[in-house]
Length: 512
Ligand code: HEC
Ligand code: HEC
Ligand SMILES: [Ca+2]
Ligand SMILES: [Ca+2]
Ligand SMILES: [Ca+2]
Ligand SMILES: [Ca+2]
Image 1 (tube, rainbow, N blue to C red):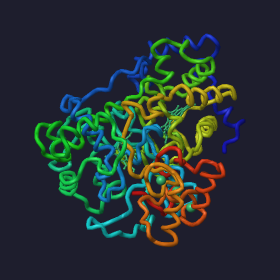
Image 2 (image 1 turned 90 degrees about the vertical axis):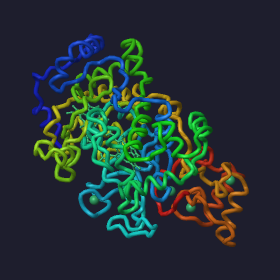
Image 3 (image 1 turned 45 degrees about the vertical axis):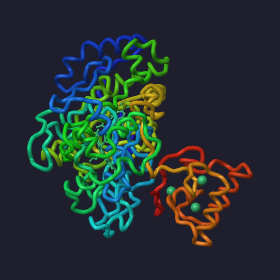
Image 4 (image 1 turned 30 degrees about the vertical axis):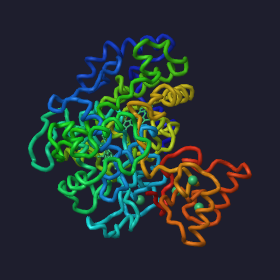
């Protein structure tokens, strides 16, 4: 950790900063007006209400395509073993990221778990042949493989000209089946969407082909394993009950191919725009829309965190090395461009809904926003060539944290309301609900006992039966549930016996 006194002297006193009482208004007008010039040089984009995202002319938004994309995004059958949907890793309620990250380590740049270069990622599929034979993975054995980076949000991803932490998904969308260029620009979402389906870490068996994906989608009942279908999905299924019919409704013929899958998934994601946070009220109506402390936080952000986190999205969409980890561990942008200066650079993420998606950074290395703010105050944890010196007073640190936590969350995202509404995945469960009738009552501990001692019950969702969430199923789970039901014991661990959701703690148990 650098010595604060040293840091202080390293700071440039001439650095222009917006400070003081008058700057709330000043900051607002300045970033609104004068930043257009800056933005041309990679500075902050001008501030103003969030405009709708650009739609590539080659893939216009249509209701049929959007609802097909939504079904594909939420269908676990898109994975080889029916266990992972796009949404498994990208949940709206978690700000578009993954509630399992905290307990899902990837060993990072070495093969050892439990040291500082570990990354908190997202579990995908366990390594397997396309005939269903499980294969041992050198890092994860027969368990689910975990991604090597923290899952970023698909919400507002429509604004990003280059996707992934390193920007490797670009606006030119090349059909992975034919090599034809389907979109010349603006198609980063399309380019990104065709990756996970054939990634043997995320959703695919080893060597999965687009013919495999096609054959599967032609055969399955859409969303067969999901429940609580949303009205738009129910309506689409009422007229088109299988994927070929849904593709026909969206594209005019029943052909299923990679290009169309990419088009539909991108169209759906272009509807996932979060623009109803207190910050949006501020963008429309000015400082009166925020509390004094939120205003102070935004003012400190303008003073210290621009140009990187400027504009209505709070990102300038560039790649910067701010010293989260030594560049050698993950070259980031450098591995894509081959330019040495890009080593250790990662995409500046939008700060919208950020409070919902801990842990933070590309490696999930910071658990709280307070830790992130400390990180900036310390000038980064490692060599941070792109980070200007940042010097926050304690009051500013607190105000920034308040601003990030309270002003940037769209309540529709947090609550999963339209357009962020969605079906329940089958890996969602109610803790304690062994017999999966969607309520926890005496029949559940009885079913667990029957499983344990009579072998007369087959578990559909082991995680639900693991009532105390300790990763094993035994008599303690029966006691925990009985205690909860009849002695007024504490609610069962997340997602609790009162609501449904994914298992936030990774273990060898599975659901579905
Ligand atoms: C196993 C977890 C997992 C699954 C399944 C998954 N993703 Fe992701 N997604 C990630 C991770 C991790 C990244 C970042 C990878 C990187 O930057 O190298 C990512 C990146 C993205 C991004 C880029 C966001 C940005 O700001 O750059 C989008 C969009 C996205 N995924 C959409 C999808 C879609 C669509 C699907 C299904 C076809 C999907 N994801 C399936 C984990 C997952
Ligand atoms: C030089 C550009 C730059 C400046 C200045 C900057 N950031 Fe960042 N910010 C980034 C980059 C790049 C990342 C992603 C880094 C990574 O993961 O390696 C990031 C990530 C974050 C994240 C985590 C978001 C997530 O989804 O994981 C938060 C929160 C954040 N910044 C807040 C701030 C605040 C608050 C300030 C001012 C005190 C600030 N940033 C200043 C470039 C910057
Ligand atoms: Ca490690
Ligand atoms: Ca039950
Ligand atoms: Ca247990
Ligand atoms: Ca668990």
